[in-house]
Length: 108
Image (cartoon, rainbow, N blue to C red; front, side):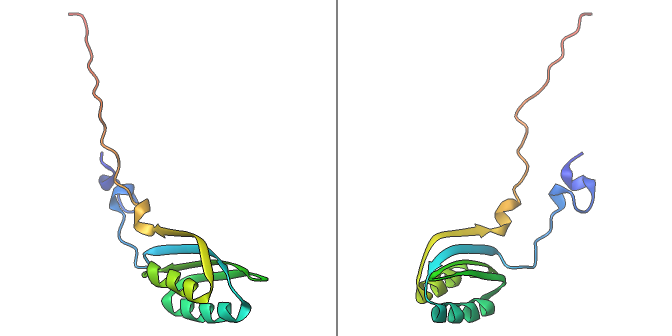
């Protein structure tokens, strides 16, 4: 039985998600005013926006289709670093093909 034969929700029958393609996370050195503008810009780019921190150091997290635009917004606001971009489709990997066989030898 292959995973695609196991019905909806099985590994082989995953359907494309309608949400954003990327998760973007970075630390940002920026002032409060710049972060307020950054929040407004990122809010227009995607969803699941979280910006937390203070005293010039912020943690930024957002789900977007344009990862480059999310990073550029950070550059305009201050100095982003430890930038991590994850493609959500990367988690949907095809199953590995089995590279072994069984040989049975019996008397007779």
